[in-house]
Image (tube, rainbow, N blue to C red; front, side, top):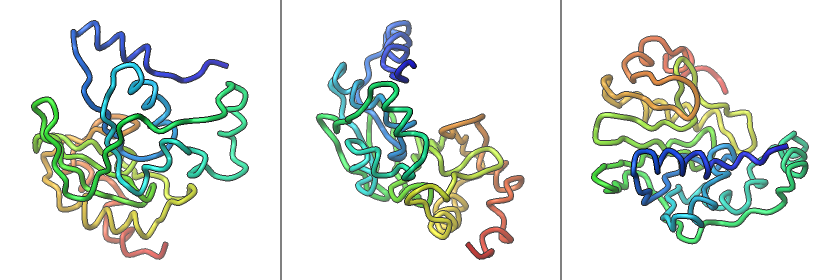
Length: 197
């Protein structure tokens, strides 16, 4: 079973376009979003940005995995038994704006999928939504440390106030816009937000 290390493919794209990475910005601590963060740091010497409430999962992703779930046995089959935190980790807080390579990234804490889930407004044009918001859906809150009530608060207080024109780049699936989701996404409607968890 091959280890899902994305350093090679990322390096190929960087070289093809003559780009130099300078930071890793992490939306949350789930392993499918963090597996290659430390190897990227080892190769390029990057600063890694993550919310303080998910930082511990960079070096201990098992801490957020569902006990008895399939992930740990799969990792063991691949020979992956330990993780380490990247060399340089910077903790994000709600409202912090990062100026990176000519881009302005405003971090907005949006817990629910994980305690430290964070979305980023980029140059007032894009929303990197991680696993908080997808096209016609939202992130799963039934996983370990997920919270349906926190997700509803994040939708109401973080997502719904955003401009309709923002282009949403989710952690999985196709891009969308805030306006499209406000109109079509059942999870952004009052009937869902007022329902019991």
